[in-house]
Amino acid sequence: MSIAGTQKSLISIDCLSESALCDEFGVISYPALRYFDGHGQMKSYRGPRRASAIALFLKRAVRPAITVLNADKSAQFQSVDETVLIWHINPRDEHVATILKAIASQYQDRASFGSVPTEGTTTIVCYNNRDEQKFTLSDLTAVDALPNLLESCMASLIGEFTRANEMKYLQSGKSLVLFFGATLDEREAFVNEMRPVAKMYKEYLSFVTVDADEYADFAIPLGLTPGVFPALAVQNPMYGQTFPYPSGAEISPETVGAFVMDIVQGKVNPWDGQSRQEKVQKHDEL
Image (cartoon, helix red, strand yellow):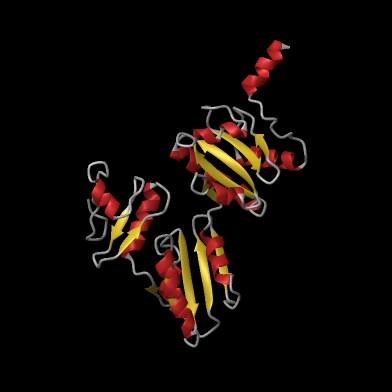
């Protein structure tokens, strides 16, 4: 199979029958993707298991790590990827070009990088086209300025919650709004609908989706009914509180926004640790 517009090929390897080969290239779980540039360099794909995300990774892989631009091409380059960083570099700041080379090498699998000369102040502009956000950095003197720009720009307004990043979200200091969807289409529809709400509360809440088939066990300690999806819950890790969204209720930007406000105003009590079935059984016994 060929990658559109290139002479690169895609090859599928069965790690069960070719375990030695997979071990050689560091494949410890699968599906996994490795890209070989034909010059002895290998890149590992670390993104979500979505065709659209994998296609973007392959397009980045065949593109130069840094695309040299002029003023006209700069505007067009802004939209080539979900995350695009354009470095406007004044020739007097030669050290910035060295920094760009190192950053592009580290993050090329997740973002596209462009460089354009300027007679003004050296400035980095990052476009998060997925969430329609723009971040600008013109003061590179602060030690954490560039890492903070990268983290802010590359982060999704609504991420994907998995075992691999569970601790990152739980230790972020923010409450979580977790949406459980059984299908990719269901989760992507939630993301597209809920972006305005996630943007409004991004300082205080992290909105995430959860693959209800793969991580169904995540739903139980949140007070959600096992196997009943889509479902949603709000969790405050700092205080150990969970607020299950009413089962079967409409999940929309308006209703979720109202649910969050009700929690903030103390109109919704946190889950007491009993499932709905347990409460029914206890009521019947009484």
